[in-house]
Amino acid sequence: MNKYIAEFVGTFWLVLGGCGSAVLAAAFPDVGIGLLGVSLAFGLTVVTMAYAIGHISGCHLNPAVSVGLLVGGRFPARDLVPYIIAQVAGGIAGAGMLYLIASGQAGFELGGFASNGFGENSPGGYSMMAVLITEVVMTAMFLIIIMGATDGRAPAGFAPIAIGLGLTLIHLISIPVSNTSVNPARSTGVAVFVGDWAVTQLWLFWAAPIAGAIIGAIIYNIMAGGNDDE
Figure 1 (cartoon, rainbow, N blue to C red):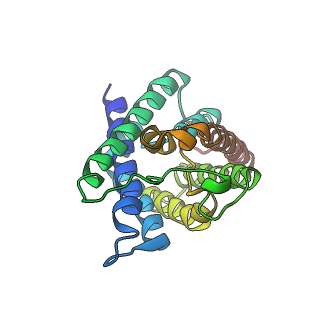
Figure 2 (cartoon, rainbow, N blue to C red):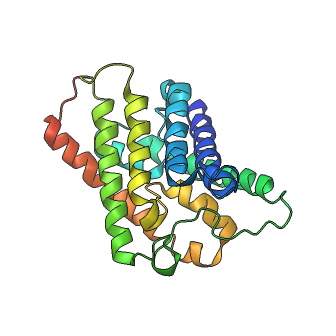
């Protein structure tokens, strides 16, 4: 149970910290952290939680990561469903906390609430196919980074930094396209509060990251020879 609690808390922090930076700070007139700030915030949530709970649960914080690590031989099948439940619950709780905070401002309007979307709901107006490709490729690269950084042959102690910076780079690339998911729990958490189009388009932000994670895990194991010497 301690592993599942850790995944809940970690995903709560990822959504509150990452989406919170977008909702509360990105457009604030005297702060305006913008694309770079939001990207860095998501990366920092992963770095901080990786050091805090990595030794407890592995710090997946993401159903796609859990599926990818299962395919890559790094994660037991018996834990997959409980991990995903904990991650989605943590994402919804993080979005709920963010809603409580954001709605305390006079004149608050929910708007997109950092949701992911395609077509007219993409920040840059990108098509469904462009968003699908982006999410698959970004998640595949994320799994390659995760598996490589945590390989027994990699420099010890630096995995959280590499993974966090990897997620930062992914956001810098893909926020204009899809508002960056690569994480079904992150997408589900905020979509629950937005409803409407965010829920209708949520299928893509489950299917694409999971497909990408599987591809990334397979590619890494081919490159690594299927043996990380752990």
